[in-house]
Image (cartoon, rainbow, N blue to C red):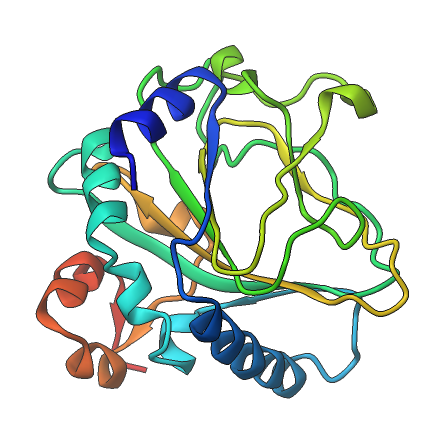
Length: 233
């Protein structure tokens, strides 16, 4: 990864796409696994699904939560004592409508802090296209330091497209939304891994805690990043 180029993009437009960050074969394996997990947890087959608490359900995402260059970027923006926030997989099925445009404000008051308080990553486990529900981004909107006060026009919404194995990185203040899946047969799924600074209470995000049994099996570094959100139940 070109870390300096990524930082420049994140500072300027608020997001960046890195192609080929994960081997395509690994993306395929993870997509197959997470499709099955979603079917177990969402019996009603809603067309947009977000499976939270993924660290508890599957270890395949653990190594990607610890990706060295991603952690280096997270530390750059959030500080050396930054923490892991949440892992979830997001499935956009054919026919799913677009989501609402929002910033990940985590309950913070406006104007938002000038420093980043949420570093978001979306690992593309399938291709993300303009038609199958790729994440829609509003470039430069993180500079406004507020939630959307209008509905952005289609010209402002830029699809974050990429082949499976790519990773989308963005500033938590950036306005974004899940795109509509207008295809008849293409399923889009991604792995969303997020990081926060030490001063932000993880509970504001409504993220599920890590179970003690899972925590005890984690590698040391992942334990350090998640020790603030462990539950015995």
